[in-house]
Image 1 (spheres, helix red, strand yellow):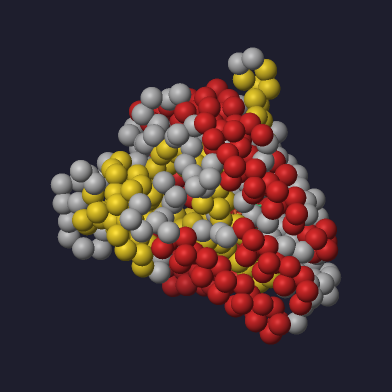
Image 2: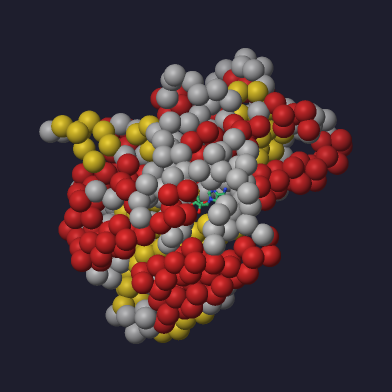
Length: 443
Ligand code: SAH
Ligand code: SF4
Ligand code: F3S
């Protein structure tokens, strides 16, 4: 342990994570990097020596949360001027020093590709604002995974960034170009997680199914990577998110047919059901192509549960375009979906385009969400009487109860007083609540 590390021993770090699962993963890696400096995680912000806000820039509301949270930190910083406040993630990348100008209480600003340097920044050995895309790979400079949290399900980022440049989206600017992590690193990290008791891994990337890399026998696609992961003894479940329709290669669809560990669940954002709007969004696929893709996926894995993302009120969207989106939703039948009102983001191609009337967009969003909610309830109802695998992740609301995720990613509450976290059990679904299921142990 270095002199500096001793001086900071047992300091407390509070991290708040906004946005997507990749940020959740990054927060864990930052906690590990700070752990090597003697920082321990705390759940209590008032006890923290450092507060780190890992931010999301995807919609205006997401970005503004940072500033309201920073406002709330003012009294704490005033009472304890040695409290360090750091801003990480996609707002850090997008706004950089503007954050410090607006909120001088911020000590450090670090982007998603530079957070391996967080300890050096804190020691004053690196600039306090770091938002470049460095040539080195941050993963080569981060400490090995540590058991910061004992959980049976873990995230593993395999791909970062995006080259697709959808007209509404900040990700290509905040996360940078598409990069795939090498096969050997991914397999090593997965084996390490499994050795620490992890039974389920969700592979992460902004375009995770666009992952590719050099493996045994030549260039591997994402399906081949999943086959290699499925050979790891003790890795019972594999999931991945988020996928782009244009990167749904045959080997991945075949993996859904052939690999029992690959869970029957797919999040495949389509954004709109109107070809005119898809074109304006620069999505590079039509509604019909999406539907045919769904047919092929369902032919390979008939029980797969599909989910998606929708943007409502994209510039130029007419009632007819909206009706086309509703029709696509009817045609597919989703297990659930995320839907958002379009939010113009500075620096993106659609930013200056004339907006749809706010009230019209609100009404469309409500109509779309009502339909998606009906589909969600129908999908949950269809689970009644079925026996599914459930991996227990935590105790439930009532004594003796456990809660975990089904194969289809539903939250399932089960009366199981003898069970332990990490048990993977067979459960018969007996009841459907608005956002969860209830089941009984089988056998
Ligand atoms: N890489 C994924 C997810 C990107 S962000 C993909 O390609 O689908 C997650 C979701 O946020 C997107 O699918 C989109 O539905 C939504 N989103 C992104 N930018 C948005 C914006 N400017 N306004 C509203 N929703 C947006
Ligand atoms: Fe954003 Fe489109 Fe890239 Fe997804 S594919 S991250 S929506 S630019
Ligand atoms: Fe948000 Fe960045 Fe993820 S903008 S959705 S945190 S990649």
